[in-house]
Image: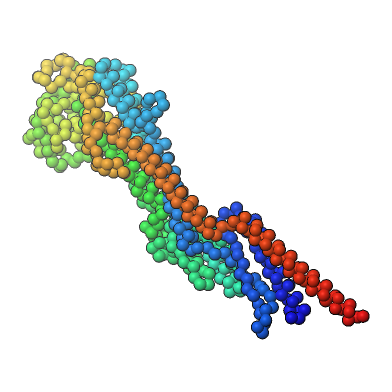
Length: 574
């Protein structure tokens, strides 16, 4: 073998060892870098005319198991969804409070309703007490205010989710841009025979980031290009980038219609089932509206229950005008039966005039107005679409069903002539403004219908029994349909409120457990990938030591060759 051939072999061994040592050193240096995969060299022997001429490193690669990578991306999507669900469930639980506390009293809407019932029971014991009357109004306002606050809080969580969807879309688009840019670099490098291992690491990290915000499908083509789509097949990265587009709502209410998440004008919202965006869509459009529905059911039942009972009573002194809340028109039929007592009294509740009105023969609302106008001291009309009854002599007005009803409801309740609460849901429920302001006292009296009174008789008196009937109505069971994760049930108002609070706590507990499970799954998948492609420092250190020996041997061979060459030159000169 010639000196030239020996020098070529030794030099190539020296250069190959140097490259391999560099790769091993880089592996050790990046062992703790997230997403870094172990790089290996591809080394082959070279030959010419059948004789070996040395060795050469042809490539630096990293072998990433495509199935393990797919597991990590899928687990990242599930973890992203679980993280969002847990955060929203925690926020919801914090909003609703608890039915128990360290002091033994709860902080939830169920406890506020119970406090109202307690205030009504106290007032029933001394119905004429101004202090207890004010306390009952304050307790009722606390319930209505808390329901409004809870409703606003739920809508606030929906607004947060909507805003976070826009943020997550930005994250997704950044990841898509990164993947597309790296595709170009990887394809170009492969075409030139250059290493793409580090570029592929960076692209895989971007893919995992993308998977964290939405579930995706992907393939890697033979030329190294990665193509990404939604799980339903809508392209996100092919020969170009197809960005997600989303505009969050300016204001979020329970009837807000949200824009869709689009790709090239196509709404892909329904194609996103996991990741942070999938979970945010579920919270905004399903979970939180379900909670709102339960709150509205509670508020609606409270309004109906208290108004029905409260309309059987009157304040003392009585009001000079009764204004309904039910929309009616003059030509509307009146489906009524029985006898209604209508009376005017002085400020002490002593009768001035009265009439017992037979409703059975009254066919329409206009006929009812005519009949009411025929009562001494009474003026009735349909104004702004509601029934209005006014005293013409400055006295107060009180009405009571002797045995009358309109569409199976009490007369006053049907027309809403003495409603305690106004509004229709948790977002709008309020105590009637004049009662809350104190210009009209909370009703504690009832009109006597037991006989035919004479002028001057006390017919309007404070009644503990009436006040207690309000609490009794609240404590009665009502039927609630299944909604928002809460099963169909028959329970009282406080009991249903407790179910809502318990459901929020249950959601938080389930979400925490799910997050722990998804985190474990992700960690397992990530560990498996790391075990397959990560750096083992001990192995790399041993390899580096071995390569140093190879390098030293090659260097020693060159030194020996040089010495032999010098000896030959000296011999030739002599």
